[in-house]
Length: 322
Image 1 (tube, helix red, strand yellow):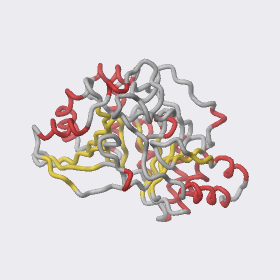
Image 2: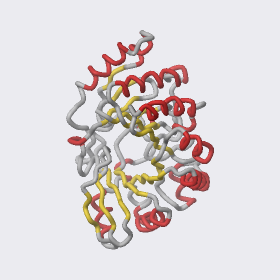
Image 3: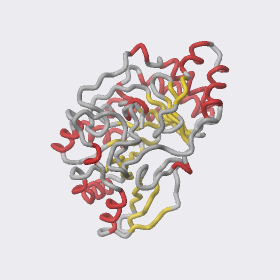
Image 4: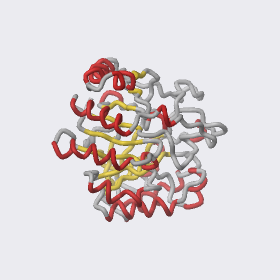
């Protein structure tokens, strides 16, 4: 395992309909790891061989004083122990922090964006403003940070924007990855089965307008890539349902409360907060990490095949960090 995803908060300033219920109950702040504890925890993982660190949420940039954490992690980039420090964000706060992120060694980011139509954006995020995200993209690119757009494929929502989003990303020199909606958490009144748009269908539609060439490239993540010959774009597909990617998984996920999930699609986890707080030394937590990794499962439990939400994870995506 060389890739660690760390959720620094379960809070978010959006309420995307495939991710959260509108009336979310968030964790008490006292349950979260402090920024100092997050630093210690991530350092323990780096000392054990983690080379890629992705910061997530919720929305990571709403965590108070989060730049002090990025500044602390930059020392591992400077030493060469960490090869990449990056984050996934909704982009709403990015205009405030892009310059600092670049200064602390962040060279690329993923921005979650499912539509480029302002009214649809407001509807799917429930109260987000597309202009703020676009301002964040401008700031990131001005700071020299490479931007990739992550779009969740949603039936009867953004399927009509497939070509428009593709061309928009091309015009701004941004990579694009499509993601199948995953069965995680109670969404209240939202019908998750109704949201599901298979990427096989998406890809077939894309092939009607472009020539798709398979790429062997892997970035250490679950995406499989094609090149659009007419534009030269690289398009990624993350398909936990139509084609699982478990055989190449090299990552684990740490929640903002110190729980380590060895698989996004399994409920098994190990509590690392207790050993971290039990000693000022990182020895106990390092031992717990080694033991946890030995229990990493061979595959996930996502499944829509029975047209029921069997295999659904009870926790929300925002808790684990995607």
